[in-house]
Length: 242
Image 1 (tube, rainbow, N blue to C red):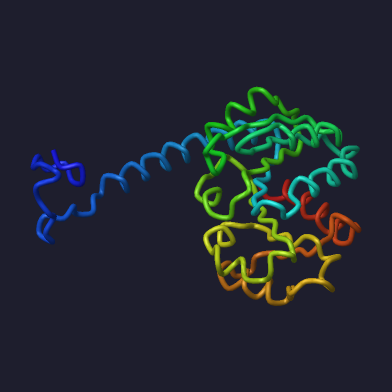
Image 2: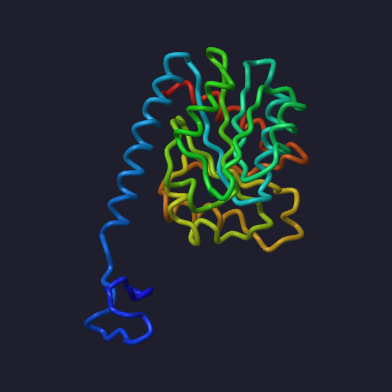
């Protein structure tokens, strides 16, 4: 059998002409649609489960190194007295981030995806069973560092936040439009480094709103604390509009 197309002809005794070339198949698209439909069903179940308990969930997405975990550590340290904060940590390997979050004072569970590049609703459903967040708590889902795949998968969150840092430049919204189009908030971290990098906050905002008109853009620095009060105020408003 031909190892190129499976046509039954000996693979070493014929060449593929244009007429015999493998045609694009719709099978892969159909499988992808079924996977996403199943995921969306589970996500709706997660959202309903959280809603019955008054829990608000934030899906935190970014490229690696933008400062998601540092943002969570400071958020936990400075707001834990207001309400319980719980975190589902997504990484391909290790439990390092979950350990950091636990040391900061939050209940955390690690989900390792192996070769997977994102968390999905099924993973979050299982993590919720282990985490058991209390009623009225704030749940963060720290997704795998990736500006592509996580945008496709609803995990049952109420809000989506994309974190970028000024060290990444100001073109990320245009290079990864699907991620930014799905965001409720764009956090621009590490503003304390603006004097030393080539990044314009006005351009970041313009580019983000080019793919997502009206999206909130919040510059802040986890290191020096500037903008953190605006971040906490945004989190407090999540419960105002389920």
